[in-house]
Length: 302
Image (cartoon, rainbow, N blue to C red; front, top):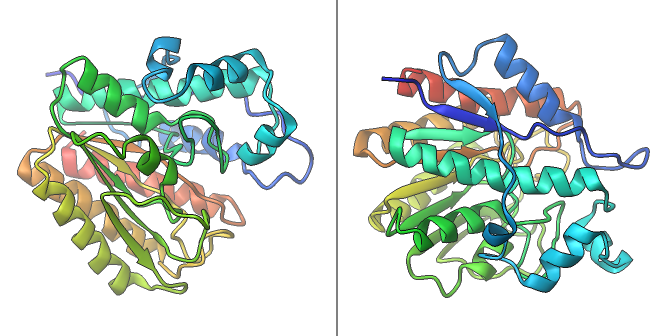
């Protein structure tokens, strides 16, 4: 039986101003590490296909999609996203959505897949926010439901920032269960209610964090999804510049092992996306991402 396919956005790094806060190099560094160290074993790593306009419209308004693709977003809208418009931004944003959709399809068939990017959970129906242009997990969920591939989808969002875009776009979709475990006092400062929100205090350490992860995972699996979309953010890490939690690298490794072991044990297909990570040096984030993929290789025998 062939090994599952995984995906990465095969686009240039975003052209950003000097001293911009977004660490664009982390995706290239992660891919290089995954390839050079064979972190996915025998699995195939492929370029993420771009999302079609039709797919983007599953989760976003026609006006917002048109302005984004055509480069007619205003300065206020670009500031809210936090990234200046460019053709590369459009290509990368479409690849991030298409890669998560492709990984979701692959996971449903093979049991596991993922993308070395994605997790753009701050993008809303009518606007982007927090470095997120289009919402990959909302598009993936709504597309697979519309196509009849799945009947129920769950999103387990373990990025340190609450997934307000996921919650807003999917609030009326009873076939999707959204769980967010995040820093209570962190961005976004106006939260949107998910199906389950677990807010953590600043400085939360490993054991309390892992207890909350188990609570969130149990709620997700009680929903009995056909597919689990796992946003494995690296920003709960204690050295993350935007995280405000105190979770060690070992704590994140234990988190990933728990989620993946449980999912394999119950036979729930799982698609992994990378989520946030802003450590200084960025190599700490890249190493945390890499541990997620290493755990997938070990647990699923890739």
